[in-house]
Amino acid sequence: MSGAPAAGAGIAAPDTERRARIIALIRSRGAIVVLAIAAVIASAVFPYFATVNNFENIGVAASFVGLVTIGQTFVIILGGFDLSVGSVIGLGSVLAAYAVPYGWVPALLVPCLAGAAVGLIDGLLIARAGMAPFIVTLAALLGVRGLDLVLARSSMVIVHPGLFGQIANGTLLGVGNLIWILLAGFALAALVLNRSRFGVAVFAIGGNEEAARMLGVPVATVKVATYVLSGTLAGLAGALLGAHLSSGLSTAGQGDELRSIAAAVIGGVLLTGGVGTMTGALSGVLLLGVIENVIDQIGNLSSYYQNLASGLFLLVAVLIQTGLVRKR
Image 1 (cartoon, rainbow, N blue to C red):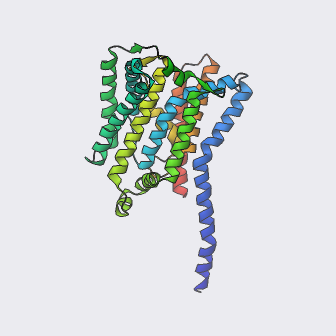
Image 2: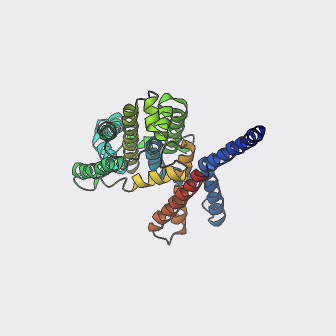
Image 3: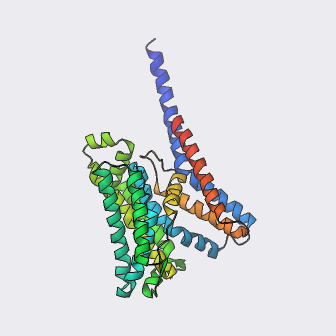
């Protein structure tokens, strides 16, 4: 009698593990499959979609929100989210415009430092003061956007970026620099997330903060560092956007905080924290870029349909995530 349950348990365990692996694979690679299907369909319907120039346009357009999504992915895996990044993009573009006369290094460095400062304030209030990420980052979104408008004194600061502009608009081996920067950013972020103690700590805190603290993980320090990383990448995205457009826009980045969250979640990053991959997040970014490009190619549709399509994809992704988590 005692041997039967043990045998049953032995059979059930591999099935359970196999089911868990399948669910994890669907969650992490589902966006890649959908991206491939969307690209094939778009290529069949629109004759100019599957061209080198169009693919480059998609990559360049996705590069700015893509950089922000890297930081957002870290924050969401940690168990939070960052609503301030959209305003930080605007701040970065305006500061880059003012710093360009002093050289391309200050034009890149100043926006990154400003974004890091915003992330540091957010992180300290969340990790040390125990405030909710929603309230803190929402306040930062509003406050930084107001600072953008004050610094710009209007909506735009026109500049002549020179060499700084070449960083954003130049090419390497026939591929736009912005695309190289985006790919390098995701590759480095994947390495940090999966192969470093910092990445392990981020996963641990997102999975179970109290357990991570009991295991000796410096929870507060990791939280602050994660928000600093998110702010720095948003500042960099703003600087590159300013270089790309030859102007600093106080309204730049509006809505990108939500687009970055949507891209990460569509890519399989759980809003509850503790689960996610950079490959999935990049797939989410590119999928949203393909949707935007297809709507542009249709021509007679308003840009509002981009938000509608993104919202529907996000809703479907969250529903699928919820179902997969319950099955797991």
